[in-house]
Image 1: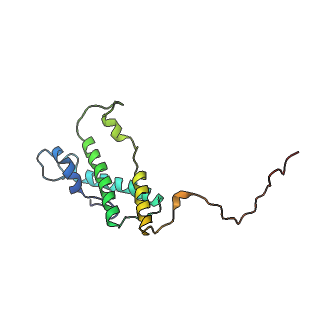
Image 2: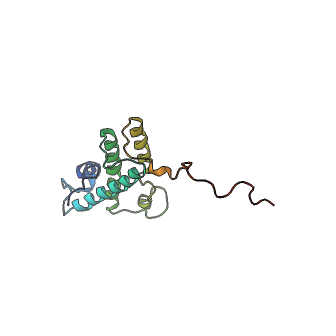
Image 3: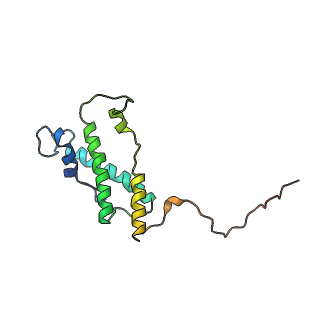
Length: 153
């Protein structure tokens, strides 16, 4: 398995943050925990999550702006590294602060990062898609069915 073309970051980037978990192995492979395929899947899934958030902000994916792409990669790398940490033995599966269970809650789905990237690209004139997240707008073409006070007695 290899990373999808719309993914951000690399397995090497994740390894740099989780090297201490490899027990002397130089790289993630079929014999490590997690495996190379597991780590690639983590990167792909977090990239997909971020891409959905970016699309909801009107940004074409994958992001090609160099600075924005690095921000996307950093976000995905940290998310994947946190999941790699969760594959290891540990305690603290409760609601206490610092518990590992907090890492499993989907509290950060990339929306804040997508908003910041959208604003930066918009300021640079690089935003190519419409702002899909703004919802419906009144165009002034429709005539109201009712008028104010029409049903007053």
